Amino acid sequence: MNKPFEGLKVVELAAVLAGPAVGSFFAELGAEVLKIENKTTGGDVTRSWRLVNESKENPVSAYYSAVNYGKQVLLLDLKNSDDKQLVLDEIKSADLLITNFKKGDDVKFGFDYELIKSINPELIYASINGYGEESEKVAFDVVLQAETGLMSMNGNSKEEPTKMPVAFIDLFAAHQLKEGVLVALLNRYKTGKGSHVSVSLYDAAIASLANQATNYLMNNHIPKPIGSLHPNIAPYGEIVNSADGVKLVLAIGSQAQFLGLLKILGLESLMEDARFLTNANRVKYRTELHELLKAEGIKKKGIELYDELISKKVPVGIIKNLEQVFEAPEAKGLLLNQEIEGMQTTRVATAIFKIRE
Image (cartoon, rainbow, N blue to C red; front, side, top):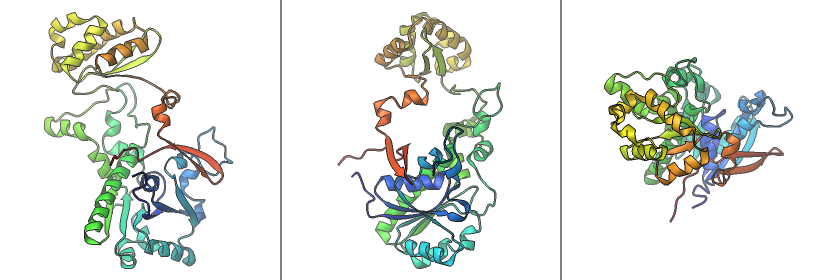
């Protein structure tokens, strides 16, 4: 089942990250994806979103390459009648159309759902917007992170509110839209009818709040920025430095794991300390506990301590930069290479699940 969507035709009228990520997902799984870019503005705006050290001579940026794998690209002007008709002709035989039009632009350019439905009633029309179909607000990931509470609880209390370093709201919305499209395709298989699937960045962000939302909704707890720490568990997110500079992060989720950690660090006596007997107490006295853990962790070499903890099934991770991450064969196995407009590009796959028959 390497190419389950072989024979599926997708037309992508979307730019930046969220919409193109959905197109890449289907391309990776065998679909024919035709991406339409605006030739009057030089194509998808992310073509020019280069790092300082990226050559201006490159036809596309690394950012663009991240979510535009395996697509046929056409640069067209939708205000031009011939170009518009070309796209409509492609849509007539398509299974899926992906869009991220601003409010009213779908009607202005003649690609609104009702019109498209009239020429291809079996099509799945998938659209992403910022704040809902009726909102005219311009939405970018950092704005949504700010307005849905994520920045208020990210980083630490000594800094300004901090955004996450990946555009997760776009990615959350992309995942939501993919799920909706898959449901719509299943429904079409049963009924023969197409449908309109829409997702807003705002809704996707709110839906991602998970336990932080329920902490507030059920206990009126407003999360504060506490760095990597977990509001409900300790030690979870605490960082321990080792003798050779390797940094380890702990993720203790049970009493057995906590006891295993203490044994390896030679701190079994802490199990007799009332401050650390239960998880609730450890959350309350986590600063004191962290100091004790750090004092013992610094005496050991990082890899040795890591291996000891892993052998005892104590959850721990080595904090790595991306160079270290992509040295691992497991990470290398997720990479996809492709030449785009004469330039070699590399990205991480978006479809990483495995299905066995």
